Image 1 (cartoon, rainbow over the protein chains, first blue to last red):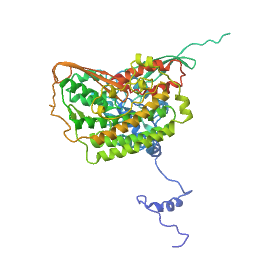
Image 2 (cartoon, helix red, strand yellow):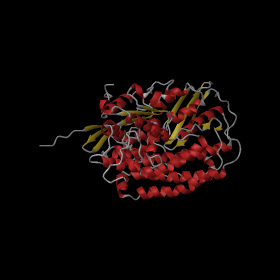
Image 3 (cartoon, each protein chain N blue to C red):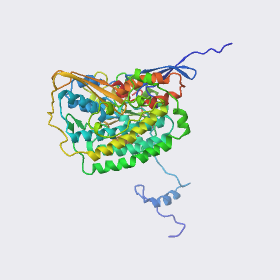
Image 4 (cartoon, each protein chain N blue to C red):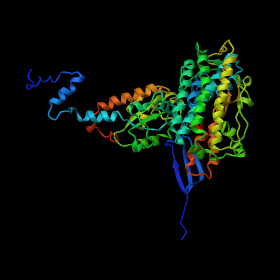
Length: 187
Length: 367
């Protein structure tokens, strides 16, 4: 093969080994760029940096703290706790929510900027849990107040379960039509 | 012309990074000085006392874990079951008593570790949190091997405990106990000599002895104010009468003293566990008690030393398999209202330091 004739172009469906990637990119005018969907990139970035509101209600908050601490280390997957709803895009409702507390949860959710997500951690936040029967003060599920994206079962869920829930939320974010997403507050 | 000043009403919570749980504090400020502080509680009221009336004595054990102080699940079970066993005349085999003592002391250490870690965060020392939770995870592993749960154990039963220790558990527990004092030394190195920590805690939030008695403070808060009272010593339950340990009592009553008392308590708990494992007798772990145990008509009051203080359970039975009434005397509730006296006159920046040093759990306050 003479140096002037370019190598044959790969078919679009061909999956090349990674070390060949530079060869392909260099053939393109300018080189060194990739083609992708804008929404994919945006979603990829958003999913990898979920900032939850540090907001513990009851026992599950202790397991949430354990998930932030050394052994489980949620920082690894880009989850960094924020102390104010204005900087947060994920609300982990950890624990039982009383009827007195419900308006405050709603207000905190409303204070969060779009796009925002809610993760209901534990049986109590999901449906009332052990406080379902014979109880006059606990809300039977946080989804009566705010829309919930991911439910994590358990009483309390282990930190591994919380991590799994966050990974599930990341999967959900990655396939979202982000630019055409309806505003959650109107939904 | 005189500068016009007026009092400012500041609302802290219920969502605040440093209120431990969902506590709302209405602070009246004169400039930066606290004139008055009023805790607004009830944001985590779970109506546990009412729910207990509809559940059998065995089912209630699971409820005490969750509905009361969630950091000290086993101490709640102990308080409740002491009342049940006292009223029903249920015998607890010696091995179960010692097992309970071991578990309760591990629970005390793990609870104090959460307190130390979160208080460290409140004061800006984030490293302590990571260190404390490292050791706490090891205790939770030990718990999990015995009880199957990390936070809520449901391990104590009327008349004993649920299961015996798995093989090799005592060795692992002793290994932890041998190692733990060196870890306490690490926390000491991080905090005790730290000038920023000392400036924020020493002499801050003083609770005088007479006020502590009047407000009904108990546990480490009272012992830091010079009240030498510990239920484990005064009214020994389980195997506490047969182990040697010291109750740390200091007289200054400030945040730093409360910190020192709890640090010493962790050392003493390690001592108790070591002795208890050494003395652990063989034998039964549970006496024969029916699943739907019926208690005779009557009423009783049992008190235990939970990590937060004097936990009392008042139990009334009218002969059914469910309690007629359960009243819980929560240590955090009294300690929270002692807070008002501690905070008066201090700066607004001290609120967090004082609140953290009291170690309240809102689930215990509201129930």
